[in-house]
Length: 277
Image (cartoon, rainbow, N blue to C red):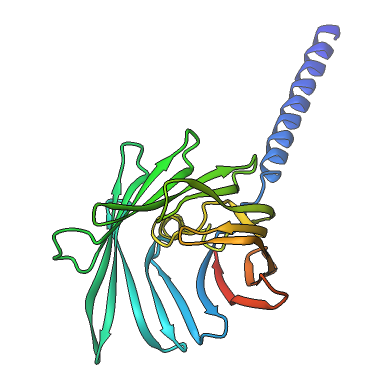
């Protein structure tokens, strides 16, 4: 009986241990965090201008085009995104002509060995032999844009150089102005929110905003800025800019105003709509 009881207790103990392991495994599965939805901008109302931007994506969530509209219907420009493999290779501007449209200027994106854009070339049309304007980029060891240089044909028209804080936001912008050889302090970005930029949900739109449309390459949204100079002029004294942002229930930027050089708010985005999946 003693040996039989010992086998019984040992069998019972093994069964209890197996049950505990199963409970722990299933409890661990239940504790997995639910991924946050990815939110893509689909419509932006530009304040006071009567203009709207509409963004279109394919089933995989990749940006295919966006349009600038006068009102919500009439298309003033359509921007068609072209790909080479998975990378954005060009941005073709299509212009309305009666009931149809014709190709206009095109931006071509040239990548370096690090798979980041090293040049963006602007052509008046696809058949033009040479770009009219070129942006050349330098990146730091963290892969961030550290320098953006502007060329008209082959002549340098100055540059922007960026310094970052510990949160990967731009802290200072320096300019090499068009006239003169000295580098000057352009802007100091003094504070930021903790939210993502409106384009952050789309890698393709992020690339276009940073490399084609010259958005400052910060992770978060700037709240206060002191501007000393641009590539064209110097301000004495420096001007202060305050940005005020509103957010939707998911933390996306839905409205943006700014106050620059005077206590009068200027709306930039009146309303931004997103689609979250």
